[in-house]
Length: 273
Image 1 (tube, one colour):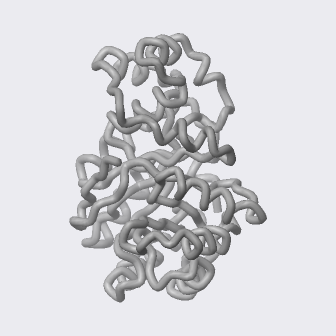
Image 2 (cartoon, rainbow, N blue to C red):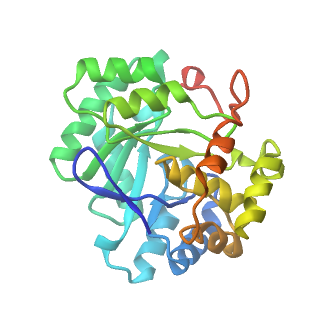
């Protein structure tokens, strides 16, 4: 497993397991299987409704806490109440701290994300979360945050896949030492990414699946990535990406796939409140 050092000096496993849209009734089993496969980085959120299942899987795993990396997120309607919201998440997870706590969306129409960020800074200082960051923040949101706080987010978790690479946000983040996390890294099956001939050719050349090639592209691009699946065989496949490397030409060809005008498959951050 490869790790990345964040701007606060802590490290994060570069490949994780996401539980977005994982049925709460099945979360404990699915996360337990992911931990058995070898994942140690789990990404959840209050709004997913499955923090309890993640917590049960952690408790049942017997894996030492310091070997796990757990992320959860502050939902939009709790931006004015972050301490209580994090306490509720910690209770559901059965933990006394998370490794990373994120503002889930800027929700700019509510105009609370700067105040929420100040609360996260206090929660970090109190030891309730090791690192803090944001999700779905675009350049204007990051510019405002950095203009009103001396604490720079450790990460910005954004929709990122070959058809929608958000180069402006990625460039701004890198300029300011913010690491990018990719959500929807395989495009959420909303377009035929894995059938693209560029990706198929790379998969054939390396004896890997198209999904493995795309995950490898994320890793070699320096992104933190956590594909989601309910199937154990896919968990194994998605984890088996450290024994090959894309060539510079293959990496560049995949980067060149970004759709003109953007290929967003999720919500635009300015419209989520």
